[in-house]
Image (cartoon, rainbow, N blue to C red; front, side):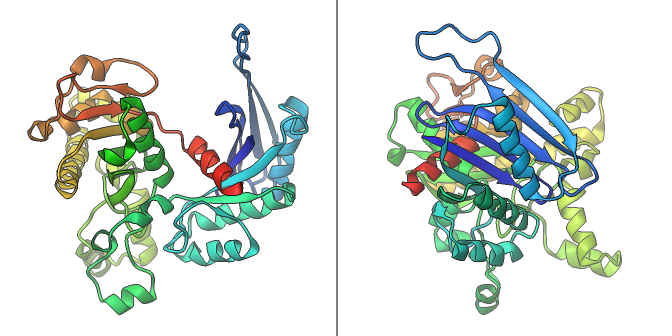
Length: 407
């Protein structure tokens, strides 16, 4: 019941070793700066008390080394060395499968999929839709399949959860033949998070997932919102790429496409210039010069007008999507907030919900402001809509899907 979860990028990868019998992390790590002069590999061992035993005095132990890491294969060798030297022993805790996060599965992959050579080819072909993400994931998959050659490897796609979107939701109103030829449609992202949080919300409330209309706000540096009806994604804010939708840390979110034409003509900006503008230099960074919401709050508190405007624009977009998704669902039973900003920023949650009283949302200020961990309710007991904070756990969701697919 041991599963290794890997999340690979072009120059780094993260990993977790999970004991799925108890759904707990045994170890985690990060291998970064792959291909640079000096790489860094960090390995953290988690210690857990067995049933009936006292809690361990040391909760975790972290070990780090710096050395050149020329490629992902060398990175996986360092990871294996860390398990052998610092534990837990993979001989005593052999993984039954390896789960890989893959950002883009296009319209081909609608569920977690055991990786074969043909699946690798498909992931590679889909790199045209996710050039910043799929190539790195593929490097990690190939290195991991060499390191763990005798067990199944499973690809879990960010887009898969949104394959239930109706055609009216995923279709863009451009020339149909052109769109089909170039696979242009809404795919949606953060699917593992939206899947995990919506199921966790139903479990927390003691309700059947199939009977709930939910809205999940995944608010981190990247941000998305999804309308979920009976456990199925029916609308989501991200589109062909993760650029569409909400205002994010460095991404613009929704934008009149004619803005790009105007900048190309009047500011002589190239395709690469526009790409950098929208993905790297827009959002909260473009409006206020910071990306961290804590920095934005401090600047607002000091009377910074640019910071206040950035906050107002961010909230305006959240409310707009909330209202639209309530209309698409025909009402809502649960609204959940997750990820770094969603879980920790009470002011953003309060502002986003302030105008939703018409829909039956009644926030409890004390519950919202409370510094607590774990899933919790922040709406009043009388609120017709349950408002929750649900910490996401994408690695656990990937491990669950991996285990189910590998059997």
